[in-house]
Amino acid sequence: MNIKELPTDDRPREKLAANGPEALTAAELLAILIGSGNTEETAVELMQRVLADCGNSLRQLGRMSIDELTATRYKGLGPAKAITIIAACELGKRRATEAAMEKRYVHSATDIFRLMHPIMQDLPHEESYAIYLRPDSSVIGKPYLVSRGGIAETLVDVRLTLREAIMRRATAFAFTHNHPSGNLRPSQADDRLTERLSRAAKVMELQMLDHVIVTDTNYYSYREQGKL
Image (cartoon, rainbow, N blue to C red; front, side, top):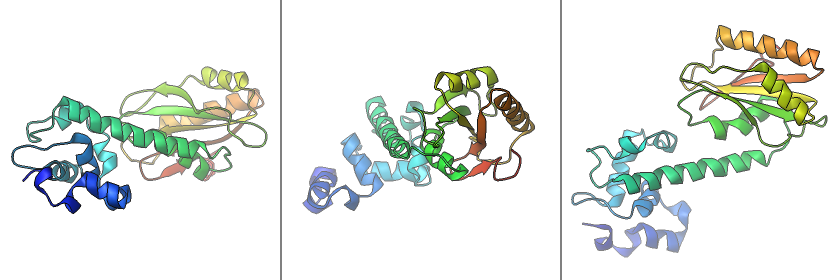
């Protein structure tokens, strides 16, 4: 049975039109995007299976590549459908980022986490950012991408980080990077970087508010741990 043979109330598009998007499951919303399944599964059933392989996590789905989505076990998912799914996940991520950016003040590690989590949550590699602040703790522009690295580490140029602070006429900044592994514990390299940033900031008469390590579910704050 394909979607057109289902009762009208069970068809995702009709269901959305009648009851709104919140009435649909994630599989049903994704089925609307891909349009059709295969000879053995409806689009809904196919996406239910894909989501099951992701632990029913949209975050994990957003990490899948085109090759993974077009694997032979997902009959009916070609490159065009895979790209549509990836694009939808990216739009969701950008919407969350926009919502986070509406909060323009940073006073704590929690504020930093809320600002950066939408940007870092699905990254398979490490990235580091600096958030530059005015005297009233309002954020100046978008977070500045300092570096992009591998799975376990990324190299940070302290001079470029502080140069950007001067260019933006910031009086304070917060540094943040992610741990794709999910391990919140800072490494010795993280400790050394924090010390270098803190020393350089004092020379430049800048306040280093915090260094926050971000994972998909939580954060580690050097300030909260009394290490800054």
